[in-house]
Image 1 (tube, rainbow, N blue to C red):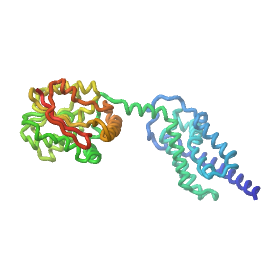
Image 2: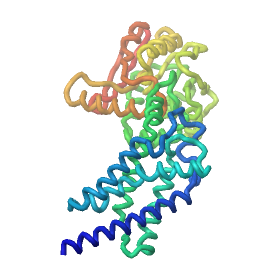
Image 3: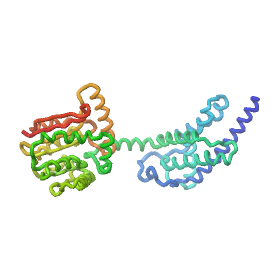
Image 4: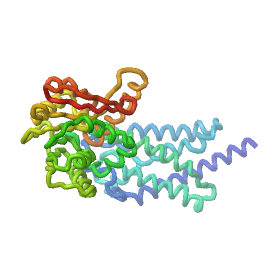
Length: 393
């Protein structure tokens, strides 16, 4: 009986090897470079890297070695199901794709020696899965379609894709975390409203409007980093005749603020919208009220000092400055919670908007240096948010 089982095992191995060779040839012939376009980046805009070594690539060589050892040495003596059913499938893309690309290069179907692109990896994975798991059972009697095999192919492809493109990925991640001088909010301007509502509800809105009863009467106001215009709407509803200058570095945000005023049926004649970057912008006049809501936390210490110096020149004697922002409580669970939220928040905005700041810097020392005295302070959401009213002596 044992002899019969070994003979049957050897026969199946020979059959599977023949099938593997056939599928290997098919997916190599039918999927030349460019079959799936340049999805994932064309070869012309990819970073300069060493030439791909195909069969001599360390991952390919190791995968072929593991495949051979598992098929001819380990499987005959080990009964673990994973080694018989899915381990070799995991090695499919790492072992087979470089060899196929080498054939394509020789045949002129591939005209460069860069590491496999996303489209090449995904395309060969798709073709192999369709032929092996969908069409295979109709062609080979011993073949059975198995979604776990496709999962193993995919997992192996992901590992291989990360390995082959590790240098490009490393540079891309580094660039993503590399801040710019000014955050770029244009591409998320249309999404900012629902993002704020989803993540913070009405907490930020309450913080912006918390100190209205303490703000003295004013004739003109400067709103800096106003963003989507919610505070602007509140200001004009409370002071319809006020002259307002609204400054933001994002034209997309300014356009949304304009549209918000139109929907609220508020006059826009007395509002001047200026696209400008701080601290380079020079205020053309002085104002009774300066408002910076969730804006000063966008700058590292050196830039924050320069921004406040620029804005203090726009505040006339006796002017008020209202600041709404995040903060980190002094101790306890509140502090731990705020630190986690800040870490997630800064990581997200540094990637998405190239935010220049990586940590929160308090503006209080700089405001005091510029001659401002704090009149009122209130906190929200377990000390995560605060609103302050300052006045120039």
